[in-house]
Image (cartoon, rainbow, N blue to C red):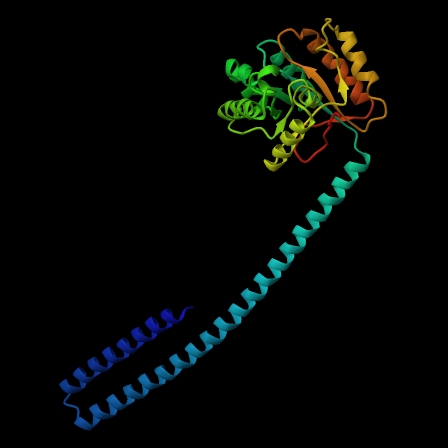
Amino acid sequence: MSRMHLKVIISLLVLLTLSSGIKAIQINANQKFELKEYVALIHAQTETVLDLEVKLNESLVQIEVLESEYKNQIKEMHDAYLKLNEAHALLIEQYEMVKSQNIALTDKIIYLTFDDGPSPSVTEEILDVLKQYDIQATFFVQGRNAIRYPEIVKRAHDEGHIIGNHSYSHNYSLIYESIDMFWDDFEQAQETLYEITGERPNVFRFPGGSSSAANLSGRQFRNDVANRLLERDMQYFDWDIDSGDAASVYATAQTIRSNTMSQLGKKKRAIVLLHDTDAKKSTVDALPGVIEYYISMGYRFDVLTPNGYTAHHN
């Protein structure tokens, strides 16, 4: 019970007592009591009021003591909660660290990547296959194609795949003409993909791979781009396994499967290069076999991230 409630109750008791006294006085007056009897009655009521006041003060003191005890108990409980919560957070952090170390030591991961899309036929079919196997991949998208087929880009993004920047124009003579031309094209792709997905990509693949950038514009050009990407918390990615589906000679599904299997070797982690332009129907046909082979070899699938595994060509 609060201090305010006690005061209200005692005030009511006082009023009730005084009211009773007044009534008694009226009765006594009607009965022609003597003045000394009124004085005696008032004195008695005064004693009652004083007694009630003493009890009120005692109650207030008790309330203050209880409030102090409760405050101390609440503070102790709150402090204990904070310590427990801190210990819990530390335990989770240690668990995640050990888990990450175990993955780094034992996990075998394949990163499927698809370049140059999206396309209305092949990309959609690839997304269907990935959904069937419950696998996420990374799509390095050309901005000019994303504008033509934004709904496909959005579908890939909404289904948990990573959308990467693969330039806007994919025009080597334009992109590798100068560092300024490169970044103009890059930013155009970034903004295009942001408008579609609501996120700016944080992974990038040079058109033709980083070796093309070095060969056409020089190693310093490539290094400058790489450093600037890092400053933006981004990373560029080449590949460990080339499926061969972009070869000048048409690659059959069997050729693609053979390339992805033969180049695996004893790699614990590998980025696989595939393409999803309209002409790559054989990539769609090969994909289930590629996935099933990697699964049979004990690999799982994951997406590329700026702070994760990467492959850089010389």
